Structure formats: structure tokens, C-alpha cells
Length: 86
Image (cartoon, rainbow, N blue to C red; front, side, top):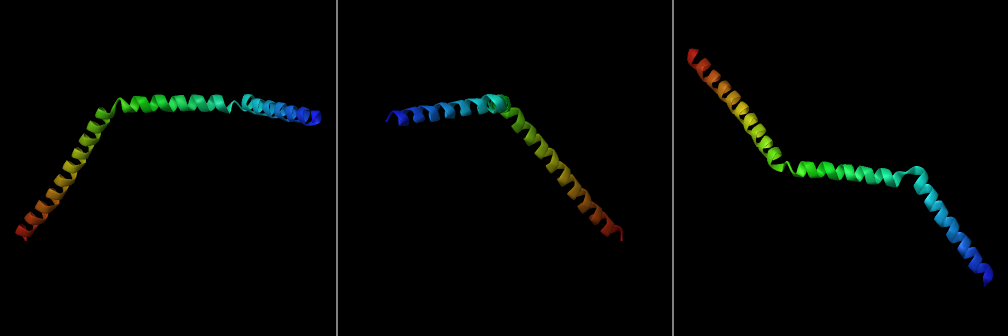
């Protein structure tokens, strides 16, 4: 019985040491926390600018629509005038 208790404590201690050493050596948990914080800050700044982003998209779409309509009108009128000249 005493041997089981001693071996169980030894295995637990080795496991805790192994987990602690891998976390401190790689530093991945600190880097992950820094990356997550950076992403959260970026998301927050974008979320605060939704109105500006939406207005910019609306203006971009309107400008593209005007350019396409004017191009189509030019093409149509050019064909119409060309047909009258022939």
C-alpha cells in the first residue's frame, strides 16, 4: 500500500514538472495571450468604425454603378449614332 502511494505521488510530481517545463520553455501560452489580445483590440477598433466602413462601401458601389451605367450609355448611343450615319 505504501509503495502505491509513493509511486502515485512520484508520477503526479513528474507530470506537474513536465507540464510546467513545457509551458515555460516554449512560451506559447504567453504568445497566444498576446496574439489574442492584439486580435481583440483590432476587432474592437473595426467595430467602432462600422458606420464609416458601411458609408465607404456604399460610395464605392455607387461610383462603380455610375461608371458601368455611363459606359453602357456611351456604347448604346455610339451604336445608335453610327446606325444613323450609315
